[in-house]
Image (tube, rainbow, N blue to C red; front, side):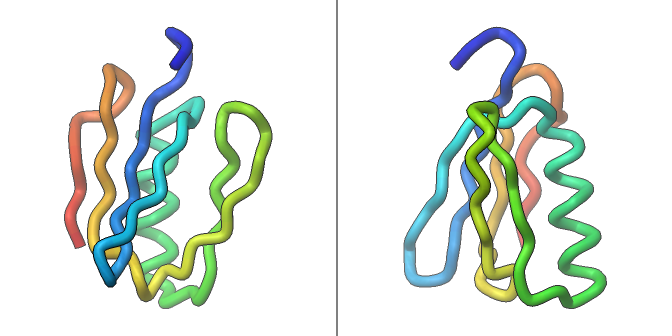
Amino acid sequence: MSDDTVKVRIGLEGARELEFDVPDGDALVKDVETAMKKDEGLMWVTDAGGDRHGVAVGKIAFVQVEGGKASGGVGF
């Protein structure tokens, strides 16, 4: 993980997790909250390497953000 990225772990129902580095953990947390409030079916996350990951919003169990750019984990 480089100094300008934040490691993010998204837990999914069924004890599965996605883990990747993102440029801005705070922005990801806001995107997840917005997607859940709007009951969106799928949200896209772009990692620090430019790869895109589709996440089924209704399957998210928790979001954990490590590092200095975000305040901590957000559970759903």
